Length: 288
Image (cartoon, rainbow, N blue to C red; front, side, top):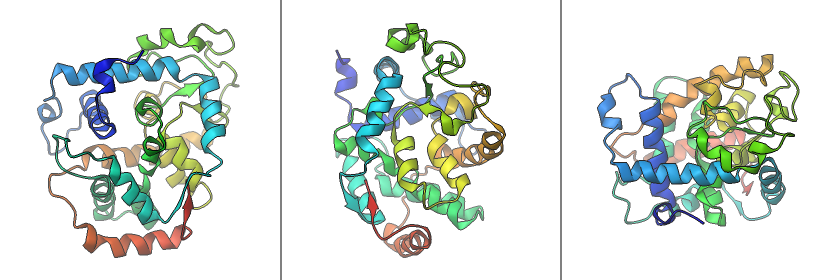
C-alpha cells in the first residue's frame, strides 16, 4: 500500500524534494552556502524516504523489461520539441510553494548555464532536453517509475544507492539469479548491455539515440545514475568506452543540480535560439 504522505505529493513537488535530497547528499562548494540546500523539514525527508521505499521495492528486472516493452514503441503522442516542453509544463501545479519555475524555465536555466560556459551546441541542446522524459508522469506512470536515482537491475543492488535498506522488500534481492555482484551480466560487459531501473533518463535516451552525439546520449541516459558517477559503485560492469564517456556525465551534472536561480529566463526571447538549435539535430516531430 502506498504511503499516504507520499501519495498526496504532486509530481512537481516530489521532483523538488528529490532534488533537495540530492543537494544534501552531494552539496556543492559553489556560490550558495551548503546550509541553503539543507533547509527543508523532516516531513520532506519522510516523503523522499517513502518515494524510495516504493522505488526500491518495485524496480525489479522483470518490471524494467515490462516498461521497456510498454513504452519503447513510442505510440502515445507525436509532438514537436516545443509542444513536448509545453506538455511537460502541465506537471507544475498552482499549489507549488517553491520558486515558481515551470519545466521550460528549469530546462532553459540548465541550458543557458552550459551556453554561458562556452560548451558546444550539442551540449547546450542536451541541457535543454535532459528532463523531457518526465512526460512519463503525464502518461499515468507513478513517480517512483519516472524520477529518482537510477541503478542497474539484474544484479546485486549496491549499498551505495540511496536508502539501500529498502531493497530487502524487492523480490530480486533474494533471487539467486539476480543478487550476486554480476547477476545476469559478465564482468566489464559495458553499460549498453545492462538494464537500469526504469525512469525518464532511459526513456528519453531511446527517443534521442538516433539524433545526438554519443556524449550527449551518455548525459541523458546516466545523469541520475549517482551510484556510479558519484560513488563508482558499478565499475565492475563498465567497459573502457563507458569510462571514457562518463567524464561527460560528470561534466553535465553540476549544470543540472546547481544552475537554479530565482531569476526566470525570458522564454520568449530564448525560444528562437533553441528552436534553431533543435532543428540542427532533431526531426520536426518526435514520437513519445
